[in-house]
Image (cartoon, rainbow, N blue to C red; front, top):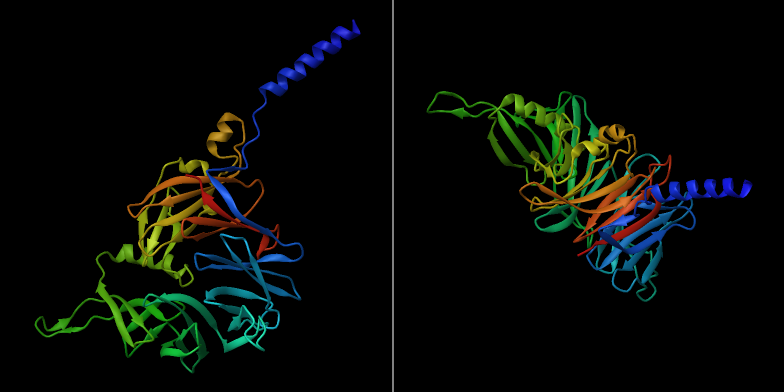
Length: 388
């Protein structure tokens, strides 16, 4: 009799296991190309590529190492840049050298071009040149080339003066300079410009410009939107304000964007993502149900042609999951977005209780897995190729 009971219990257990949901796949729609993890310390935030090589940093409070890996062969070149900076915040490959932007203890920023290979008596990691400390240093694309914007902000008696230099990465030469002096309310009375936000590393100021005198109408034209280029000392874009209410809402988003004009953003009601290009939004049409995602998880990379990559993380207890009384797997979903705003899900990475940071290299994407409770860097960096 005892044996019969045992058989019944075993049968019930077997049925329960058979009815259980299969374990969700860790990766769908993509294949890892490169996966690196820090044995000590952490993988730092800056990541760069020239299409053939992947550059990343591994560091801690006492050391910072620059890794330059050839994607095709996985050959890894390691350069100690501890003498340059222990807190790198931006990175660019410049031929057989690399430009590293670092943050100093007082919050200022410096930039140094370092050697990647030995040249005679010059050792890897040696500084070719260093740009003196400034308020911010930002890598941008200008005139089809990657440049460094060196921005220095200094208080004046009435407000703030902003000086900028556009610097060539290969030799540190200043290609152009300029400045803008604003009063305490963000106005330049001479230019009749009120600055709402900045772009391209503080090299361009965007805001509202006072209208100009129209002799035919014998009156001033209405105020308009304008972009002022500090490096050339000229307005590069001026146009009328068609809808004042719309402009105010748009300018509020731009003021909160931290100097970025191309980015992904959620609509005000969290109904759908938007792609912002040159400060103007375009709605995104997902091929998946938006209600399954956490709107706060949205990340995006916008290309110059208006296409984009975006990522959203599944909310395991979204409304549909609650209705089913069954939590959804915490997938981090990767989408490509066409120029007309159509978003197609291409890959899924399981990220239970995990935070990722998204980046893109050509037709590949990378994810930096964040460490718990630490916003700088992460545990690992993985470069993925979409499955075909």
